[in-house]
Amino acid sequence: MKEKTEFLEREYKELEEKGYTWVIRDLLGPSDVHVNVEGKECIMLASNNYLNLANHPKLKEAAMKAIERYGAGAGSDWSIAGTMDIHQKLYRKIAEFKNTEDAVTFQTGFAVNAGVIPQLAGKGDILISDELNHGSIIDGVRLTKADRAIYSHSNMGELEKVLQDADKKNYRRAIILTDGVFSMDGDIAKMDEICKLAEEYGAMVYVDDAHGEGVLGDGHGIGREFDLEKKIDFQVGTFSKAFGSFGGMLAGSESLIKFAYNTARTWLLSAAFPPHVAAANIAALEVVEEEPERVKKLWDNTRYFKKEIESLGFDTGYSQTPIIPAIVGDSKKAKELAENLYKEGIFALAIVFPMVARDKARIRNQMNAGMTREDLDKILSAYEKLSTKLKLV
Ligand SMILES: *Cc1c(COP(=O)(O)O)cnc(C)c1O
Image (cartoon, rainbow, N blue to C red; front, side, top):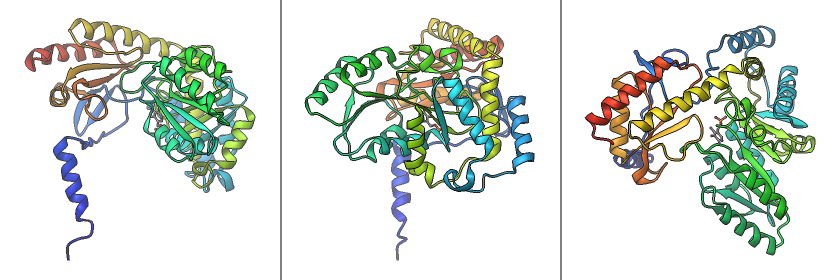
């Protein structure tokens, strides 16, 4: 008898032929500016570790101390017996950091979206989503019985039209959902306009600031950047990017937080992250406040790299943040460039169709506060060399 799972091999091969499979490379050591990739020393250009906190001594020390005091695991779901005083301390710290009434954490940012969105809306409601929102928002929306509307990326005219139509249909609730910073282009959501439209049409605003935290608003995120901390109803984020650690967060009103942890199944039915993760997360927020030069350095690096790579002739698209694409055209070219960068000791990610349009394949360069001018110049001279060798620009 043929193996029942034979289709998996066949479908995998199809993915491989289309070039949709991932090559997973092992890091032999911490995620830092300089990394050991399977024995090869590389500059890391593909991590979300914007503030270089993943290997920061304060985070490590906080985590080790917490292991000694609390052990290795939380022992239970958050809801039953997994919430410790150190988790509670983290919630208060997040609320203070985000300037909201209250906050709570989830295992991951993904778990916030997959767990909370389905509880916020149902039949008779409408969820309005930017077309380029993260997959976890898309999945959260799919888990509801609410009506859905998608607007073209950051197209405020279209968003307004959707809100006008929704107004006529007398929905019970309307929620606009958006990423804060979009991960493929590094552009920022038009939060001022979104919040203004939301107010005009009586809609709520849900922002997932995973790539904006630690980066915008002196590190406090998009709410602080636009001075809209009190206008964004649902603030979602993660400790796994600029904050260098792990875990999702939800910040907002007291009533939102109570409601979320009493209804979201990803919170109720899944274990709490270990206490040392909470300790590292608290330390991360403290470091962002104590070492403001990190955010400043990240932006200095961003401005320098963007200017220099553009002067080599590369198109950086709509980038407004430390995510700086170098758009080269078709998928093959982008992959070839990534492979060649790797040979030059630079670990970079090619982003290709279907993640971006067919003719907009790119390398996604992600800046890091820990990079020196020497690191950046090494990357830039590799780009210069390869752009001639591969006839890119
Ligand atoms: C990365 C990302 C997530 C996932 O966060 P995790 O904590 O790693 O699960 C969710 N939303 C957005 C917008 C992201 O960019």
